[in-house]
Length: 78
Image (cartoon, rainbow, N blue to C red; front, side):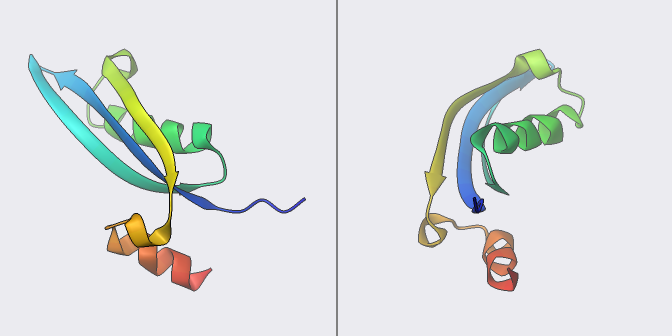
């Protein structure tokens, strides 16, 4: 069984110090849960409680749909 690395688009919102923020992150991962955990971990490392982070959309996208140049470079290396 071969696992293929996919590109996920994770969108959501969080609140910090009575301000609300929206985010969209592009992540390479094997599973959707792994991609969500990376995003939550990254945002919570900036002083946001995990319970205040709400993911509203999580979907697999193609390399052409991804605007992140870092993801493009990583994909070319593998």
